[in-house]
Image 1 (spheres, helix red, strand yellow):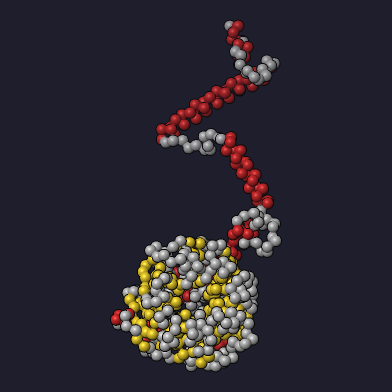
Image 2 (image 1 turned 90 degrees about the horizontal axis):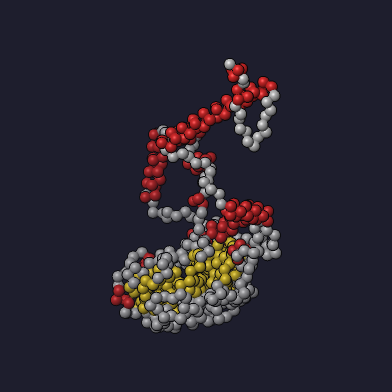
Length: 543
């Protein structure tokens, strides 16, 4: 009976190790202890429920793990160091001096040494790409037109018609009207024998005897060559005829690109070839690649878009010690090198591998492709002119040049063939019929025939080293490297030489290379002083 009046707290003691033992004063503390005991019991029940729930989830599938199973202290240290270095780099920026040569080209000026931010670095990379790669290859296909521009280009007409096109339906009567317009336009084309090409200033007849020429700032005024300019060429597919892309190369082992506008003529970029004094350079068709060669048994192919340089060490099966002269087909599919013992070596423009040889009597001195790329012309020490069909590799024509001396240069247009000799005589032949049908008179390969030239030009006193037709074929440029100011321009339709230009005061010096721009708006001349003279032909600018 006495135990019934005893409180439970006097009988039982709770072990609270590590915690201050509460005092036994009062009844309130006992009640608190009862509450604590009850709370612990509730916690135990909750833990049992959690354990049972985890077992149920383990039966149904694997429990999801949040976070890593273990942490590597060394990795954390590395991450901390990396974050610190990134923070330091972000504060410091990117240096344009300590990097490679390509990074150094991103500088605005030569003395720029301060680091730039990442956003400025990205901006300069984009500008570099636009000024280099995009000038040789079209990139406008990647531009996404704005919605309003797309609607305008569609010629949608009224707003209601545009809404119909957006919703996915349009009036069938409107579609029928468009079809009727197309049928009418096609009928008008088929009923007429007029040219399908739009009339331009280049198709207007060029006045004879007098040529309107205006000198512009030198094409390479931004960075002149340090030696004779052996090669000058405009990119064949320059979209903007007013601002074409120009390439120069010379014995200073430098290949340079310029954006020609007649005023600033900004330099795009240049590249140095330490082992190659460049004797000949040419664009590989409409691509952005350039083929370069010199007095070496190897040659280079430079891709201006990607910046890659490919060195072809030799031509398999050939033993030539010099590949300094070559010609490329207009489509860029074939590269023809002048070989030894009367051979013309043909290489595939894409693989750079040997695909065949062409043989002629004597040694090869000049080769030229026709504008359509179907034939290749060749001539040399025997004074005979050979014509080969590219696909069949057969000589379909052979005739003797009327001059009778060694051939030094050749040029071909859509209607004419020009043959220059070491005596300075340039013969102009009619070559129109060969571009319209394929001749099958293969016996001409062994039988030399006579062909009468339309005109013999004797205005050069020394060897006719270079011949070049304008884009429309109305002008023939003739030059020699053996006398100063040795340049003459021929009005092809009339067969007369322009008398007003060049004059004795024209600062041509020794002409080493020349080329007409697409559309013939510009005429570039490379001389022995490292300058690339630029002239504007006003006839092709005035409509």
